[in-house]
Length: 69
Image (cartoon, rainbow, N blue to C red; front, top):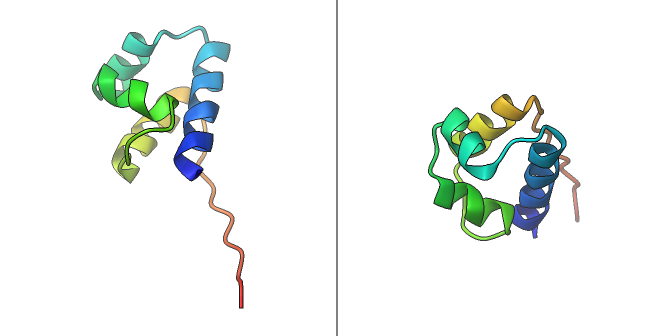
């Protein structure tokens, strides 16, 4: 579920900035196929890939940790 939400957020931001998938992939130095899969909620992207994308998109990664006992 987390990957799907992340992918949707990245796709939304990319479109807000008017960047195509191939151009974003080039800017982030990742494959277009990797970006395609991520935006659709597939795969298991590394933190390195996520960091490259959010840096190019001017975003920040935050993690909300909830304790369950």
